[in-house]
Image (tube, rainbow, N blue to C red; front, side):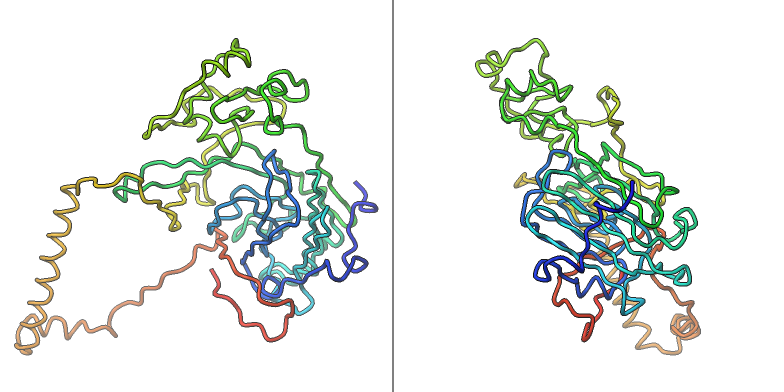
Length: 395
């Protein structure tokens, strides 16, 4: 589509409504939460805060983690942009109460600055409409390398499931499943172009059983009387939906039957496998998939420090834990005794062995970032100016 009429001119907008994010404009692979002045409907879920990332996308999830590029995003052009390269590069946003606009202005690709600067934006309208605007795209998007950072454009959402963690006793980890994605043809992203997304009706918008089961605007909707919610079963509330048995309801039940006989409640330890059920795909490209990172390993939130303590109390200590503690104590005691012996017998064979292998002879061991994972860290805004900025820790 043509850009005219869809591009939001930040320079002509009310200056009090436009903010330059001081930290994001000076960093690389950072993200920051922003509170909206209105509820934005995203796949039927009303969101009041989003997370802007330097890499050309908005993260729409509730749980901040280091793999923001994987799913739950609104991405006009996700790539390895580094706003800190130039003083003219900024990440700015506008909120006038009915639309929230994020603009990546004159940003350069990390390590490929000679390609030129990019200027583009994403607009989230209170009606749920999403507009991507592209003002300056100096090179074809297909020429942008995805080696160190994903390169994509479109929308994505997912739901999370809490599962017991086999590695950490009495803890649970989150597994994220992507259930819908819209991918744009990046070859069509050019100068002065735009893409507009118009939201379709969703089951979540229906507030009563009658509207849920009789609406002709939505399909595959069912009503859960326990939760007082209309759903297709594929949204961010899927775990709760199945835990309360809402996915087992008979299609033949009427709203009166549900109101009178529905007293089901989930058992304390109810669990399920999202992939065990038959999933019917439709024209909306609905699918369910376990989220994978760029190295194709299954992604768990527990891996980034999101292990959650179990609600159970007074559980017995596992035998393996006791054995591990005993072995650790014995190992520490052996090391201490060996150190005392070597210190008191400097001419012994053991002492000479370690002297010959003192630290400056050891090979250096360094922990390196996996650049192809495109990890992000969250920052808090402190100013709107590029001057006097102290850079936050990089991923």
